[in-house]
Length: 167
Image 1 (cartoon, helix red, strand yellow):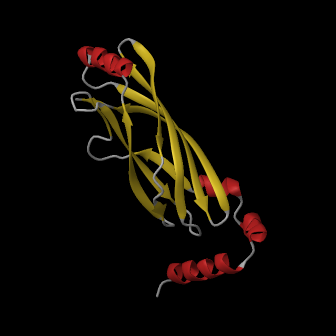
Image 2 (cartoon, one colour):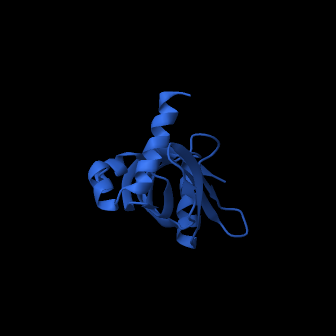
């Protein structure tokens, strides 16, 4: 049995016994926030606009990594704003939310998919961008909220220059 397994076992026992106010001193909110990474999924097409479907929409896949050695996380919500960068410059395109509540265990990663239905003005803009170039880039401002045994954790990040696919 390795030392890491023993330490993880003991830390989970300690986390279950100690009161929250002591745990907040040992593992403060600023450290908990640093233990969460949010990015775009690296495989496949992580940002896809489907314009030709029955209901035109956006599918965006986030990769959430919980690096905490102590806490399991539950996603409460992810709110994001997307700007599209094309040859014409930056365009604020949409605002979306992810409201599912998956759990991300400590030291694990999970891919989650947000789906946003597109409005006619957004479809028109995307069709214009598609005429110019097939692969625009998106900047996504993410505000993610997680529930944990020690309370809510908020993580904000900007994901820049992510390739998009427009179908």
